[in-house]
Length: 448
Ligand code: HEM
Image (tube, rainbow, N blue to C red; front, side, top):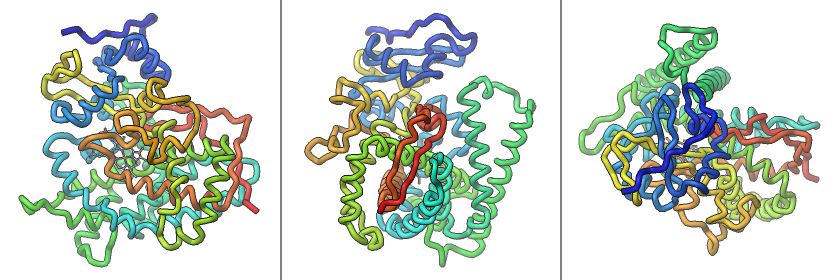
C-alpha cells in the first residue's frame, strides 16, 4: 500500500514545523496548492502532532458518511472548542454524543422553527432600524453578531435572558477571543493552568459568570416546571431517552446550552456578512432578489418563506464561496483503508470544506457569484457542496440557520440598497469560523 505523502517545506517553525505552520497561517492558500501537487490525501506534521488532509470528494464522503464509524471522534482542534462549549454536541463523541443527539433533535423539528419565526422577523426588523441611522458605512460584523446572539438566546430561553442579554454577549465575546488566541498560538494549550495573565483571568471570570447565569436559569426552570415555556430549554428539559427513561443532567444541559450559544450565532452572523458583501458587489442579482421580495407582499408576516427561492439560492451560493465552517476534523478510532491508503487508529484527518466548494475541478468559474448554480436542474451533489457538514454529524441547526438567514436577508433588502465601501479591505480569516478579518464595512441607503 502506498504511504500518504508528507508535505515538506522550508523554512520550518520551531514548534509548528513547516507545512503545519503554513497550513495554520494561510490554509485557504496552501491546502488547495498542495492538493494540486500531492493529490487526494497528504500529511502535515508539527511537534504537536500530524494530520492527513483529505481533498478528494469520494474519500471525504467515506470519512464523514459511509465509514463514519471508523472516524467517530472529533480531531485535535476541537480541544479549543471544548474550553468554550464543554462536552456538548459539537465536541462529544461515541455513545455519549449519540444519546445527546437523540435528546436534542426534537428541539429542531419544523414545528419548533415555526414557533420562533415571528421572533426572528421582529428582531431582524428592530436591528434594521439601527442601519437606518448610519450614513457613511458601518461595520456590520458586530451588528450581526449581536442580532444572531439575541435570536439564539430568545430561541433558547424565551424572555428569561432579556435582562442578562448584554452580559451574555460580552462573556461569549471574551471566550471566543480566548479560543482565537489559542488557535493562533496553539502553545497556549500547553501552558500550565497555574500561569495566569490579565487576559486569562478575564477569560476565567467570563466563563464563571456565564456558567453561573446558565445554571441559575436551569435551576429556576427546574423549580417552575416546563409549563408555560415554549423554547429550546423547555424541550431539552423535557427530553428523555425512550429506552432508559433518563433525561439530561444539569451539567449536560449547561454544555448543550453553551454549545447552541456558540455554534448558533457566530456561524450565521458571518454568513450574513459574506452574503451582504457579495450582494453589494453584484447589484443586478440584488435587484432581482429585491423584485422577488417586493412581489412576495406580506409573505414574511404570514410566516411563509416559499416565495423567496432566489433569496435562498443566493444564500446557498454565498455559503459555497464563504463556507463559515471552512473545515471539519475527525480522529480515526479503528484502522481503515481509505482509497489506496492505510489510516491508523489515532490519526487526525482534516476535511477542508472550502476546497470542495472552490476547486475548478468541479465548478465552472468558481469565483463567480451565481445563485443559479442552485436551481433544481443544476444543483451540485453533496460530495462537493456541504456547508453544513455531512453524515450523522451534520449541523443540527441547519434549518434554523437557513430560516434565520432568509428572514434577515428579506428584512434588510426590503428596506435598503447595500453598497460596498471601496477603500475598505476585505479578507476572509479562517479561524474557528470564516470571518471577515477587518470586519465588514458596507453602506446602506433606504430604498425609495
Ligand atoms: C450558516 C450557519 C451554520 C453553518 C455554516 C453551520 C455549519 C456546521 C457544520 C459544518 C457542522 C458539522 C461539524 C462537523 O462535522 O464536525 C455543524 C455542526 C453543528 N451545528 Fe451548525 N452551522 C450553522 C448554524 C448552526 C446553528 C444556528 C446552530 C444551532 C442553533 C448550530 C448548531 C450545531 C451543532 C449543535 C452542531 C453539532 C452537531 C453534531 O455533531 O451532532 N449550527 N454546523
